[in-house]
Image 1 (cartoon, helix red, strand yellow):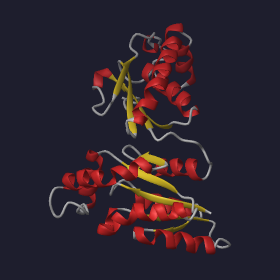
Image 2: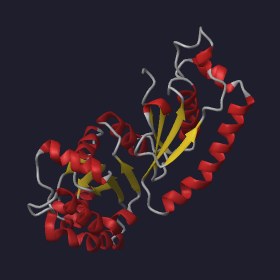
Image 3: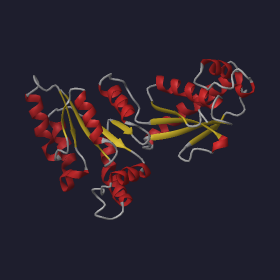
Image 4: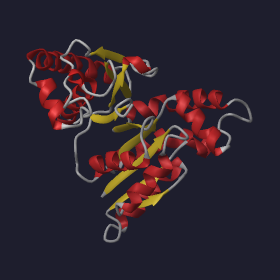
Length: 284
């Protein structure tokens, strides 16, 4: 039987995740007290003719009962009951904004500042995150993208790194993305803007992609960039980083940066990294 434990930060998307798994024919339960995990798992196993895969949300809403989680996980292990932990994460800024939009208090804020509750929750969940089999950072994800990620893990059986690489193309004339961890400038590449028949197109068009990538300087750059990222990404993962934002910039953010961002996303995607791709200034 497949048994998934969903946990993570409040506001990171656990409720959406369990609904997605429910649509994938998992028997699901939300906000189960951790002490009942072994009982719930055994019940599902006894009913395996009816239930062959189940998922349960366990989070900080359980209050003091959350402290029973590790004891319950140990019991599951001793009984030979296999499970996997899916951890949902997001940046502090995004979580604060989500709570403001919902106009709801954070479960650990005690009527105070939302950010204080989030910081307290991160501390409480630090060890749980370290034990997680899968980590999904929902900072820049919509519901459709979250569904794709969960399906890729639990439906397609795809091996996935616990690091989401968010690749964003942009134009320097409109400013650098303020959330980027790494910035790469591709303004040294030949510019399709100066070819009249190519100017109206974008890096999502084959004509632009062919033009940019036919030049040796572009191909060498991509090769060296991929080589560097293949070195860096495992180290970021080891340090516990769950999302890395990589910015690719050209003058207007329409041709060269879009092309290189697309190529980079394809290459890293083939290596089973979770990729979020966006073109901020493509239509400006």
